[in-house]
Image (cartoon, rainbow over the protein chains, first blue to last red):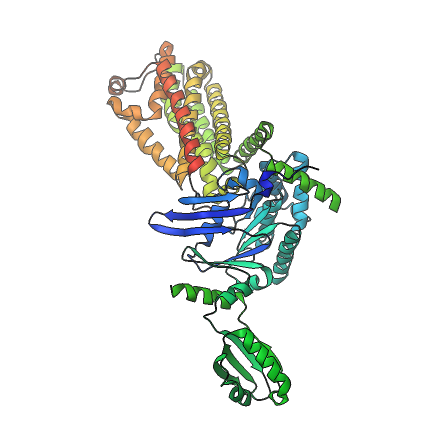
Length: 319
Length: 277
């Protein structure tokens, strides 16, 4: 039994007081974080610093201050790149190559022997569902197929961390489902996945934790629920389906936890509540005692990435 | 692949990832990159362009060779120097030098070289060697073919021209590879350089023409071609053109090739390609 090597014991990826300038413009500012295992979503509006973050992590850019480490090695170094697989969002490939040739070529460049490269190529192509279609030249492949090939080249050397930039753009719903399942499989195998996306609904389903970026800073990170809890300043929005919205509104309006009520229609109320826990406890007790309320459903849309992201941005602007 | 086999491959890959990369693996990667670069550039439209331009030169040489008593001197001065040295050689270097890294950058595929676990100096070196092999081979083959087409006059010109042509195309290739690595539109910059510095300034009188590579290439040719009295065309030009000796010119060209290579390695190793991905 051999001890694990020091490289494998080091954190997967660390940003240590990282700042990156592009001339007078700051790309990212004072980033300090360690990338967790599992699936992490990287969210932010245009200009937030997501692309800079990814390029620093994948060693395409060097930090102006601080350091980015991958398994204890500078991300810029060749050695660090062995641990990362990067799927770029730009649809640029070696058009004259077949998908299989391209993936095998990347495997060889990562140092795999001819035999291992062939084996891993087939494994990577199977992982992305391209085994039977990888012999076409890339020029003749659809956008979805090219996306899968780009993923395959990122996976072929079995990296510890897969970094995917806008992976689901332009992919059909079936393809999206398959890609999400792929990320889940990778997570189950102990790999980390970092997914950058504008599509916030994807993060709800996919990411165990998210990193919100804005104006070059990490504004918040953690699970969506954890981030939401941190934003104690902001009331939680809930909607209630009931027998009579007006009657229920009258009953709830005096509650201290209810900050605002709006009647959507005869049978639906929209509330803003703060803090949520006491409200839910009290409401549950009252629903049992007040059958006339006839509560059919209680929902919150607030835990979606969209809502949390809006709050996070709004919260950051207050400082 | 079964789960057990997959697990074993993964463990071996993990162990391989953690260990420092051996010299053998680096050598293998380097060789693979060189081979792929060579093959990819050979089977590209740049080769088509080079072949077409060579065919044009060949036609011109063939037409010229039909005259009565073509001499080696005339062949060198009227055909090889303007058509081959001043035109075809730089174009070959643009085809295989500027497009090597510059072409990948313009196509957006450079990102794949920047994210693999191959040290950047090694990537540049393999690209450099692949480009030199291609441009050098093409230069020698085309020179040989032109000399054969020209007949006995051409065959006598071969030993005069081949060292200068080889060093010249290597110097141009090293320069244009560097330009492709530094500038976003390296091919355009290389062509602009060729036209303004090599064609225009290279033909200016005095010592200003020494900033062009063609000055040293021609110095080599004139030195080697003394037996045939090969010299610049036109009396005025003959007076103004003050070549250096052949050995001096060779040393300068070799030094330029080495310096451009080292500069390219340093720049490529540190440059951030923000426009890629």
